Length: 185
Image (tube, rainbow, N blue to C red; front, side, top):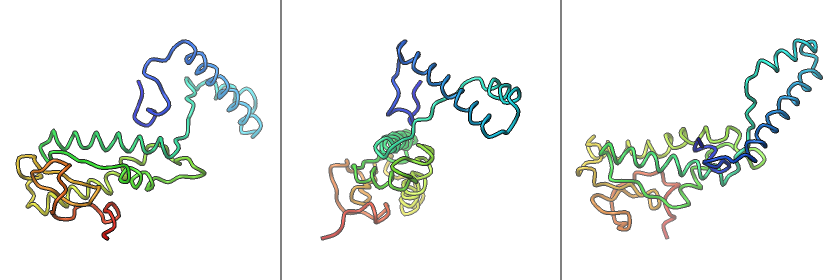
């Protein structure tokens, strides 16, 4: 099955052709590893062959570009929103593309690709989104969002809006870091 990190590049039901490509790619990876280890003179040929033969499956790694990381971040943010809503902590979270872009920019990239793939997405969300939710809960007296789960956090404008759907952006305490908020004019 597809994971969130691989969602941008995998399909739900691979066909014979993609299975044949995967087998061919695994064989190529095995041969490449064997040749590199052999060229590096880490072991003699027989030991290198045994070491490579001990690996059951060579899994190709497809680096994630910024768009793929944004998809991973959005997926994690949706999942976190659902979990918080089911727990009764908040009615929901709403955001726009600028929030996703900001969160994705907190992932480390080198030459256009995420260094650690989608692994950093949960940590980035913990650092920025979870802290904001905790700040809201503390500001509300530790009531887990209060109002029977009717509160919303709006990263778009950086405001907490009690008992109103995301379309109604009025007043409230700042709960999202200022970098999420629109510049005041």
